[in-house]
Image 1 (cartoon, rainbow, N blue to C red):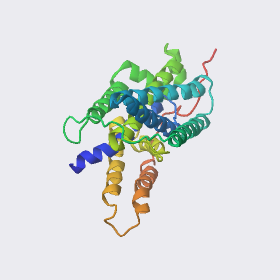
Image 2: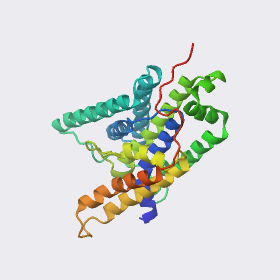
Image 3: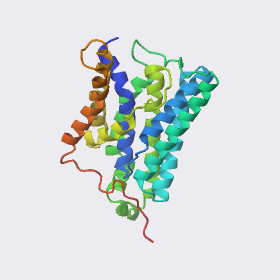
Amino acid sequence: MIPLLLIAQYSAPLAFTATGETIGQKSGVLNIGLEGIMLLAAYASVSVGLATGSPWMGMLAAIACAVVLSLIQGFFTIILATDQVVAGTAVNLFALGLTGTLFALGAAKGESLSGAPRLPELVPGVDPVLLLLPILVGCASWGLTKTAFGLALRAAGEYPAAVESAGFSVTKLRLIAQGLNGLFAGLGGGYLALGLVQAFAENMTSGRGFVAIALVTFGRWKPWWALGASLLIGTLEWAQVAMQGKSPLPIQFFTALPYLVALIVLVIAGKGTMAPGALGLAYRREK
């Protein structure tokens, strides 16, 4: 397969998730629970895909689980004004514990979560979900910058009181953003499982949710830039697999390289960036 297509495949889970998180952060909500949401989506996609024999049912299950879990987190952080970091950490622990328990129970019964149906390819290396990625990134960019809804959503992340004064509901805008965030994270988790490996393993997201959050900052809260940052990390992930057994360096070096580069780039690119003014801050409507 052409290396560029392989890089696109390895980049897709991060790109989907980072695009959704860009929308969420633009509304003022930091979703620390992305790791858990992606993990639960990956489990749902494989288990439902195996049960039905359809990768599309698996992807739908991934999206549904991710949206529900994202909205549950949104209920606590947006409506109940719970600390966003605490709520996100709880989501991560919940998903890790739930998927680990279900995986262990299935293994004890002799059930396997491997050999899930592969997404059909339109041409070698290109499936419909991968083809959908640039379209959705373009829609996210256009929606955030060229529509009245996007303007209101961005204002909710900058000056929520002004948004309320203009007749919009900050709560509704942020909940919609979290629903979209969950949709994209579901695509990311589902594609990781069905688009790349057709299997589920415990903690298979391996920190990708946290990397996606970092890529939003790296991408300056712009969907296309977040896509570019995802392609950088995806290139390193592809190189990690391609170099296995071909380099005198230990495999652990290549495994850690994408995360190390993401950290370095975040430190360098994060200087001078301006996050949304109300990011991470709960909003209570004044009476």
